[in-house]
Structures are given as structure tokens and as C-alpha cells.
Image (cartoon, rainbow, N blue to C red):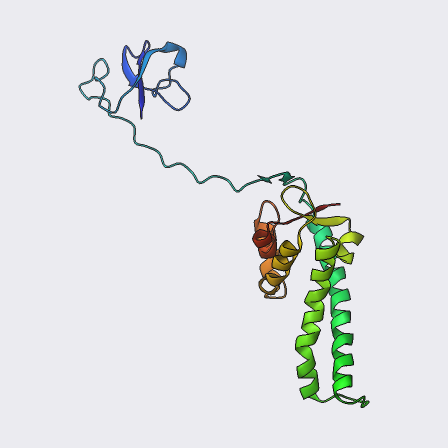
Length: 212
């Protein structure tokens, strides 16, 4: 409800501004007899127009959170390290994926050498992909960090700073499918737009990548 008070400088009742002073710029030390009111006030001396209640201003949306639990923006300011860690993990994961796919296709072909039939490579592709995702999930679920993140001095935690759970690791890696769209562009955009540097998997799993 709007507040009114008597302003000694105006010589009349006026509306009280947000800073506690007179709406006409006079100091709050000049105000007395504060009270709540919604009706119009008597006009100022020399005027015949009553003072109407100020329109309610639209409050701006709250700023994005800069702290969740024990995690602040200071802890997650590690974008260059994350980029290096991801590149390292991606090379390791792709290497495992390639050799797992080749090994499976060779096994299915009965050990035949040379170029493998495209159909066999197509059958091996889902297995290879599961190896890539299994690489990330296995390390995150068991030790809370992948080799790439460990190399760059990072770890994955929950909002209390504790190691992420297996369920959180699972959510992070299920959502990785979306984060890797456009060669990782979706995840990069979400991380850069988030004050706490969370990609979709982090937001769903309520996890944070911080300095170790």
C-alpha cells in the first residue's frame, strides 16, 4: 500500500518515495506523520489538483541465482579448463569407441581381414556409442571425475559440494545427447548463458563443475 506523510518543505501531505523521502525530492528528515493510504491526498499549496497515488511499478524479474547451496559463481569460473577437459575426454572416448566398434565388427565377420562390410559397421555403431557414454558415466558415477577433468583440476559436485551420486551422473549423461547437438554448440550456449555454468545435464542433475 502507498505511504503518505506531511512534508515540511512542501507544506502538505505527499507521497513517500521508495527511498523514504518526498516524491518531490525533499529529504525524509522533512517528513512526519507517516501513514498508509490509497486515496488521493489534498493538493499542494497553490494547486487545485489532488495528489493521486503513484502507479505501482512493475518489479524487474529477479536476477539469475549466483549461489546454490555452497556453490557460487567463484567456484564454477572454470570455462577454459572445462574446454580442455572435454577435448581430452572426447579424444579418449572416441578412441575407445572406434576400437570397440572395429573389434565388434571384426568379431561378427568371423575375423575376416580387410575392409569390413558397411552393414557390420552399422550394427557395431550403437555398441560403439554406448562405449562413449559408458566412459563418461562410469568415471563420473564411481570417482566423480573423468580423466580429462582430473587432468585439468576439476571435479563434479552437488549443491553441497559433495561428490555427485550415480543418479546425478546418469542424468548428466542422458542429457548429454541434447548438449552435444550442433557439435556441442547447445551445451556451450547453455553453459555460457548460465551464471553457475551449467549445461542441460548439470541443470537436470543439479550438479556443478568446480575446481578440485
